[in-house]
Length: 166
Image (cartoon, rainbow, N blue to C red; front, side, top):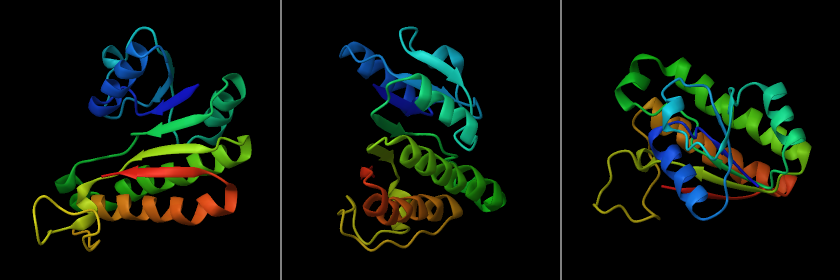
C-alpha cells in the first residue's frame, strides 16, 4: 500500500487520483496547511496529520500495510520562503527527518520525493539538464536540496531506496 504525504495539495491530489484510477487507492496524510479535504479522492483513506508528528506517522505505519511513500508534503512558495525561512526549514527539512526516522523504524523501504527545479537556482540553460549545478537561491530551494541530501545519506544507512523528482 502507498502513503501519499501531502495528498490534499494540488500535485499530491492528482497523484492520489491517478493511484485510485489505477486500482491502488492510497492512504493520504495532510495537515491542510495548503491542501483541501475536498481535493482528496473519496476512495483514498484520508488521515489528517502532520509528517512532523512522529506518533501520527507511527500510527499510520502500524495500522496500514504501507510499503511505499510518495512525499509531496512541503511548503512551496519561493517568495514566502525568503520572508519566513525558519518556517520552511521546520516544515520541509524537519518533516523529511521525522518521515525518514519513522520509515526506517517501520521498515518502509521505498520513497518517491517531489523535489523542485529550485535546487538549481538560476540555471545556465532551459530546459535544465539534470546534471546542472545545484545552487539554490532561496530558502525553499535550499530545503529541497537538503531533503535530497538527507535521502542520499539516510538511504544507504537504513535500506530506504528513493528517487527524487525535479
